[in-house]
Length: 195
View 1 (spheres, rainbow, N blue to C red):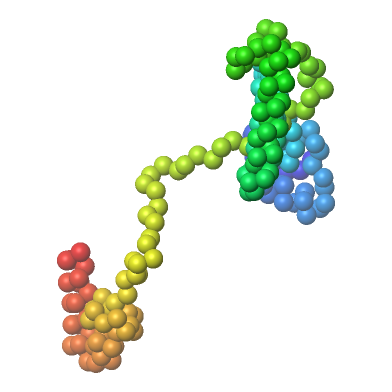
View 2 (cartoon, rainbow, N blue to C red; view 1 turned 60 degrees about the vertical axis):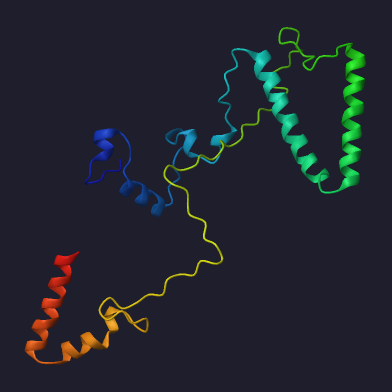
């Protein structure tokens, strides 16, 4: 039995990070039953789709697979005019063949009730990552190449050659007498009151 002084294992039934580090250091492998599937590398292999209506889910799956494949092919074909014309001709020819074979001239020739049923095991279900969401807040300002960054200046004497930490004006006061030190202190306090 493993115990820790934080007593998280006894209170919540979950091992704490201290116990986990000791187990890793000892080379103990965590049993698979103690790790939820969502925290493993195989988390995406599960099927979160609802299979209550297999007709619609299978049609959606096939449509998604065809769209992904077509997108890849068309992105490559769009780079050259010959490939573009070749694929355009192939698609138009196949569309006409399908219309004449089915005898249908409308856009959707696959009614939901008359769709061919496939076994769920026969076709793999590919679940893609969700689309990235834009963060809240204002977007980042795009800087023009004409915009030049402002040159940093000393906050004491406004010289662009140095900053406040290396200001010769302040150094003169610091190296001076006690009266000069009082002047530096008064300047700093006056600045704090202004801001």
